[in-house]
Image (cartoon, rainbow, N blue to C red):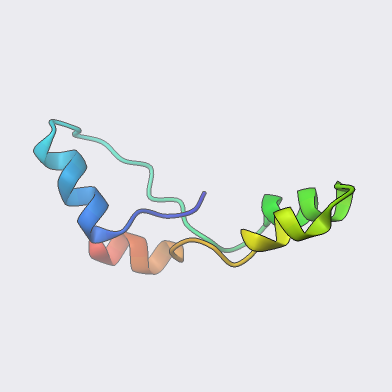
Length: 61
């Protein structure tokens, strides 16, 4: 997961979403794995540190 910011969570709630998966950054980074596998590693590395950590995501929601 990449987490959900508080602002995004509020927008989703206001649109009627009742349940969110707040899994955030931490643990296995599929962006890093794909970067290692790719011919052009720079693409995957762009997203390697992208996202909201799980504790921050949960606290914001």
